[in-house]
Image 1 (spheres, rainbow, N blue to C red):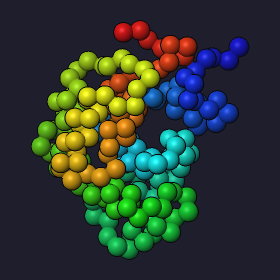
Image 2 (spheres, rainbow, N blue to C red):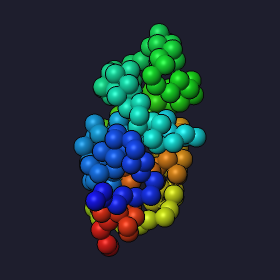
Image 3 (cartoon, rainbow, N blue to C red):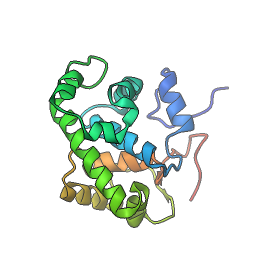
Image 4 (cartoon, one colour):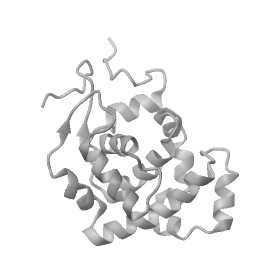
Length: 182
């Protein structure tokens, strides 16, 4: 018998199932991962996560395997290359924001010793267990601070999804085989 998964997980998409089963809501405080996920989540604005996830490998190639130093140095020629890459989301505002957000991410990581430390300054060390939400006071606070610092496409809903993706919030449905009570 197949395992019961969260209602949002398209079980016909093996990439989505693997993400749900092995990655989503799993604590990961490695800055390289936190960076990749923040860039990907910012591209989700107005789209489905499945759409972004299906293009993840193409994003990795287009964004130099999310080498933050390389992304921070992107110039007009690289932006043009990204805008013509049919394998990624070609939204000029999101591409510009991804480069800007990369520079700010790097500054925050330097200021706090790591981006993980920055997130923990809001979230603490405990994982938050909740389902059925798209924002909360934690995502509101982080989003507001990131906007204050100059990031874009980091609204509270995007940050809430990001916190779920990186394991700061655990949100598997009660019916899901991965559900854990509080």
